Length: 333
Ligand code: ADP
Ligand code: MN
Ligand code: MN
Ligand code: MN
Image 1: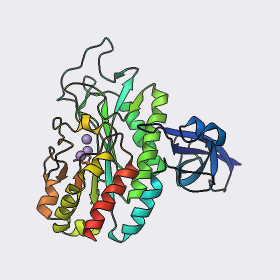
Image 2 (image 1 turned 90 degrees about the vertical axis):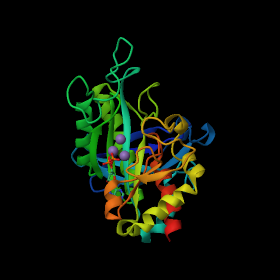
Image 3 (image 1 turned 180 degrees about the vertical axis):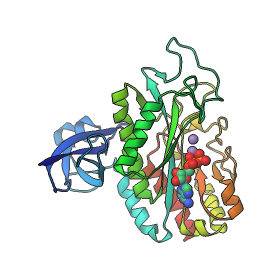
Image 4 (image 1 turned 45 degrees about the vertical axis):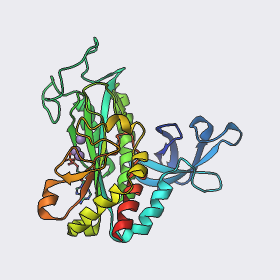
């Protein structure tokens, strides 16, 4: 007998890469091994030497096909087995290895927006706009909530795959939702987030609904879509001084972080819509208008984690978790 292994990888589309996948039939009991693809069709190679290598990195159950079928998230390599320039996971592996003794944990809140055709789900098909923001966040009822059957199917699929999913909620703009992955180490959380994104796109096919990670999917007085990134180390989970030291360290590397937090970030971090301006760093307890929020329980218990509210929905979690791990763990070492 055999099983289907869906090999998933991140392509070279600029400015924001796309997910690609294809299926390999493997004999029962055989682990997914290296495979290849045509990099000239994914912005990852020239036609004259088009072969790229897929190196399995994270294998989970395939919740769509069920049975023994698998999803195989891969790193992209050159044929000499060195990491491809689009492979941002390789650099995270090194940084995580260096700071593993501090046991960094992440929890990422992935916001996204469902679209039917050219309009966000819930925006009138005849054109124009729905009622202003207010009732949609964590709402109930057909007037305010759009796309829940897809969202529930996606949540069930993430759980069946064994992903570190910790919750979901409806967001501030109609058709906008969030799921959270974590807490876990930077590699697991980033791998699981990429797989969860792929599942959202794939399951959306069955509903005729597309999901976008566009950080500002509707112009005007509508919230953008972010990927708030929650972070802690052993020392931060045990005391308050390291929490403040991590915030200060992030404040010393603002430009480098903003540059790695997703394309179009200056359109989302305007200072309005629960954001801090991208060029002004701030942190504070309970403050959703700060770059970094210290959750209120953390302020009271004097230990826990911090929330970097800046990353865009379209960020690469391998880059975001690498930057935060490097900046904070280097300062706390
Ligand atoms: P918000 O109140 O900002 O909407 P959420 O409940 O959506 O927060 O997300 C909080 C995230 O923080 C979850 O993904 C959770 O797993 C993560 N988290 C909780 N504790 C920690 C911790 N100690 N370190 C890192 N992440 C954590
Ligand atoms: Mn949240
Ligand atoms: Mn949110
Ligand atoms: Mn948040």
